[in-house]
Image (spheres, rainbow, N blue to C red):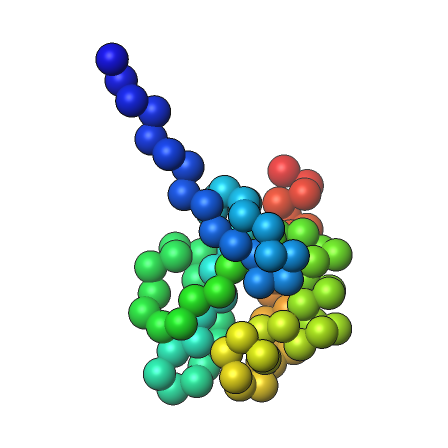
Amino acid sequence: MVSKRKTPLRKCVVTQEQRPKKEMIRIVRNNENEVFMDPTGKKNGRGAYLSIDTDIINQAEKDKVLDKTFKVKVDPSIYEELRELAKKKSNG
């Protein structure tokens, strides 16, 4: 019998809902307080997960969710990158 591996779930910092890790993007703040996307999910630093959805990304920017999570000012370019990623995902 082959046991099916459990899908790793992560919680979205905006919606607070648990979703499969593959449907989310990890954002990291490192020791230098730089905030960036981590598509591999393996970079060192404080990580937070965000659902790859344009509405959720816009909500995160409006409410400054990442600023609060990481306790630093997050550059708007991060949200642009996230929106690009969401666009690519939704277009297949």
